[in-house]
Image 1 (spheres, rainbow, N blue to C red):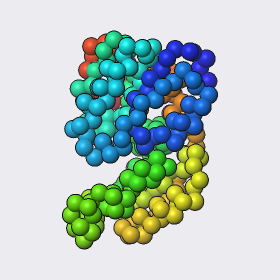
Image 2 (image 1 turned 180 degrees about the vertical axis):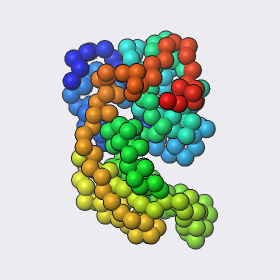
Image 3 (image 1 turned 60 degrees about the vertical axis):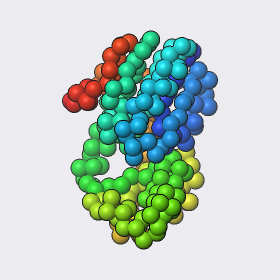
Image 4 (image 1 turned 30 degrees about the vertical axis):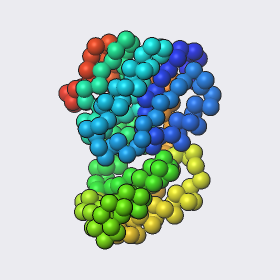
Length: 227
């Protein structure tokens, strides 16, 4: 673990809460500000919310890190203020759970059309069945809700549960299998080999290959994520 006592503020999606809170037990210098996972479905609202937390932390943080990738362009326009802003060079958070962007790309190439689930995703009930039950049904009724979700998922063929080892896998497995069966997808589990990427968010090192480091005044652009 990095021995620094510099105050680190991590602005992160709540979908990562199980993994981050497990790691934060021994890191009293790390503060985590979470935003709701549902923002990924309305990325146009994300930048303003993220920027607000960055600005709040600017008065006291030694280091500000985002627990977000590009996320459907949701962080475009976000900028550093008084201190450096550190951002993973990832297009979305699945890279965190699989250990690296390379691991994510390898799995995606082998299994295109995969819908990934994680402990946090299921805890927040943001799996397809949870979205139907907690959101769509109240708005449009069950029949239309099911139709709408099946339309959203029509290009997906596989549900993959990423077991990061921070939660009881049995209820997660049951729920993930229910999703796969309901939407006629194959089911697979992926072992989250380690939490290395989550550790790097808190401790570094923030290498150029894996992280963007924005100076005060710099603004996030899409071009920054093009390798």
